[in-house]
Length: 79
Image 1 (tube, one colour):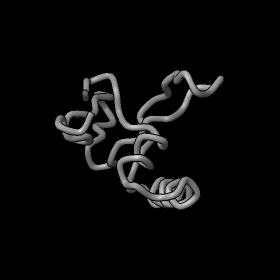
Image 2 (cartoon, helix red, strand yellow; image 1 turned 60 degrees about the vertical axis):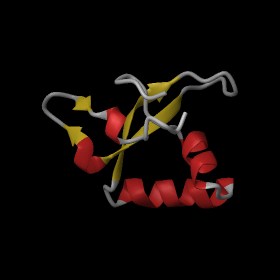
Image 3 (tube, one colour; image 1 turned 120 degrees about the horizontal axis):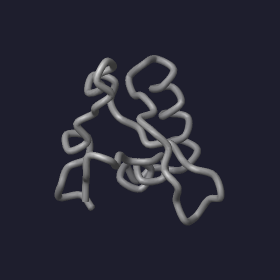
């Protein structure tokens, strides 16, 4: 379920897209480099000791306010 304080991680995007980890990692890196997506924040997950990034489309980020409409990023029916 999508909430205002949560966005998809690389692992979640990989599972949703049904692609390999290496392909997803490279695609996300390329999209971030070209400004298509942004790192919204970090989130602690049970499968890693370090926090992981959450990603959002760049056109949904509102820089001055710092608010991202996460409900528009990840469809509500995709949990």
